[in-house]
Image 1: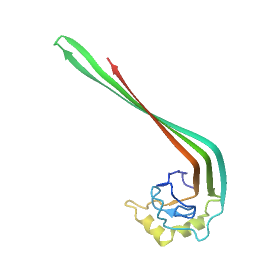
Image 2: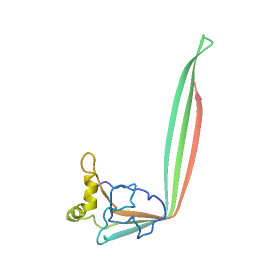
Image 3: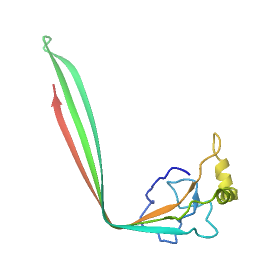
Image 4: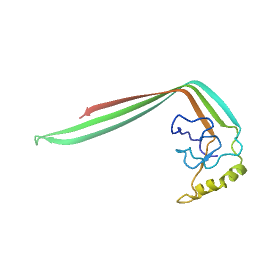
Length: 159
């Protein structure tokens, strides 16, 4: 079983029966719109919904630099500056629906799907061995989604 990864869809206009479906095999997780393989029978799924969800992510970056300068040939000084940037992303979601496969595909089912011509060609297209392919095993559907971004920048002289 592979590592679980969550990616945002390229935009917010996808229908439930659109190109991003549970069970599809794709070559590029950042471009899930062109499946290499779609299951003959849609897999059984389970659904869970959370309400009034709040998430936040904070990232801070800072840079500090200094310059030694000789003033009037007799006085030495250290001129420096510290610059910081703090970004806070806050997400609010009225309801977050998680739809996932009830069971991972069996080894036999996975091998059968990997042997399909488009999937096999994508695997063999790796420059230094086999290239990975990815199966969509779940979807998260956010309703009433809001994002708030707060940016603060600080500048400080140091000596």
